[in-house]
Length: 130
Image 1 (tube, rainbow, N blue to C red):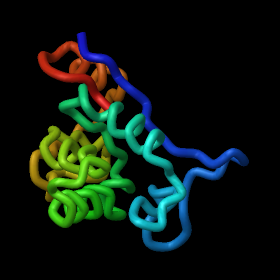
Image 2 (tube, rainbow, N blue to C red):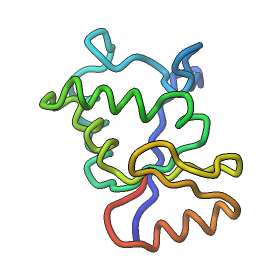
Image 3 (cartoon, rainbow, N blue to C red):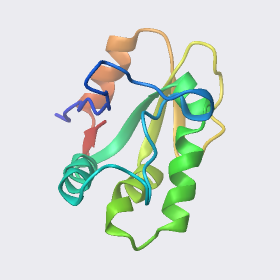
């Protein structure tokens, strides 16, 4: 059975979203990132075993998939962006009762009974779910 791995970023004071453009992103991941090499390596390790990513409709619509797809294209050989390559390659499942069709590559929509949908994904073959 696949594992469902929660991966989220939160500041010490409980802040979980940036303002304006990337509400799903707490801070920028790039040259000006405050993350050291060890933290980036640990973050990448989370994505090494996954083959499916669960997303909310808002995360998908507000740019998560586009942002990391662009990062994967811009930094194809950078080891600190290995997770971006995994995001592009993974099957994405957007949990939404509003969306009827996916407009992103390798993405499907799941709606209705959330526990049933997640349990069905966990029962499948392959890597873990993040």
